[in-house]
Image 1: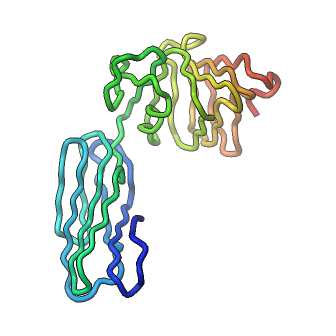
Image 2: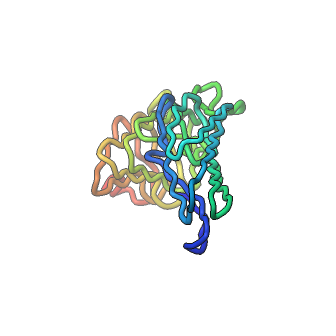
Length: 220
């Protein structure tokens, strides 16, 4: 939920959403969460992103979003208490089903949904990955932080084996903590520990876990 902090007697505009991410075709329901409204209010919603703009004067509108991208949501409320506007950038996310990260990529084009338009930066690619998506890895990609996976995703090597993989220079490389979080066809290397599997589980298939410091506990 987003809102300005204000005196309870004053108009404070805010909103919430039933879900904030999904694939193309997802319907997002937005709800007015403003406080301090008096009289008969009017509402003006604006949702912009993916090269599109949607507007509504309903109190609690729904928007079906078909274009991949991050969407800005803005709500203006007019009532006897006054007029207020609350905007929030990147509030809704329509994600691609497939995201590509490639070590030697030079022609990155959002949303990185083909090998030819892959990003070389892992954090940039991972930001686009939601539950039920697939992240394709080409080459040995270095990550700045441990990858913590707590949702149903597949991370898979484009060619597999020693060719594609994830690398760190310290700490764990990957932590899996979802029963359907899956690593497949990857080399996991360079960390203090290759793969740590938490209490919720995870799946490691056809991976090469090597050259990590704690060689006796790649998977725990």
